[in-house]
Image (cartoon, rainbow over all chains, first blue to last red; front, side):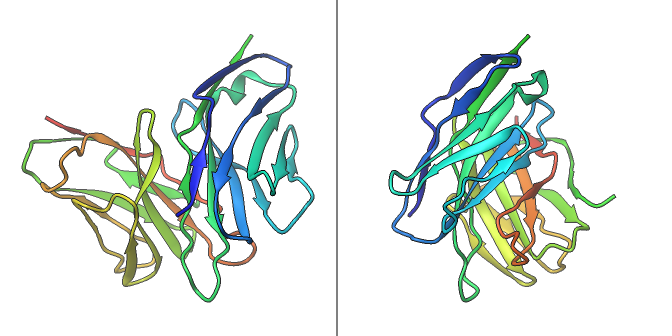
Length: 118
Length: 115
């Protein structure tokens, strides 16, 4: 079974600064997907960024980027130029590559609460 | 607008009662999921479905039941057998394939409190 570990329950950062959230995972799979999801105080969860394990290039979405280290099974999220609206719970998630109609199940970490201070 | 609708937003239940949480999506997604969220526990998967009339147990299915009679709908019943049902429940849907597998779209959640 896959496990996802987020070792930082809470973090804070000053507005306009950069912060990195950590995520490690354990799997015997070679092909899989990794995700970061954001849950703001309003509670509706949204996808931040997605990484496919077979791609060596790190995914980026505007101010959000990842550092994907496959050998180390590490998938950290970097938020540049932090904004007050980035205050949220951030969840790392894992999904093994579905093949032959097999399942599309996501496993989530316990989350990191990020607070951006003015 | 396309999206996922969960209802009710807040629900109170007496011990021993079954309760059903509604989840509807108009995104034409094949996969649907129910997660339970507790403080400090992250999201734990209860049930998921990849196709109509089929669903699979997740990690904490005991005391819950689901149905998937229509593509758009995936209701969750919390039965009296669930020993600790007070929680926040999140429904999600996802396309399958199209290079977007695993991209979950979430509803706003349902807060269930057992009195």
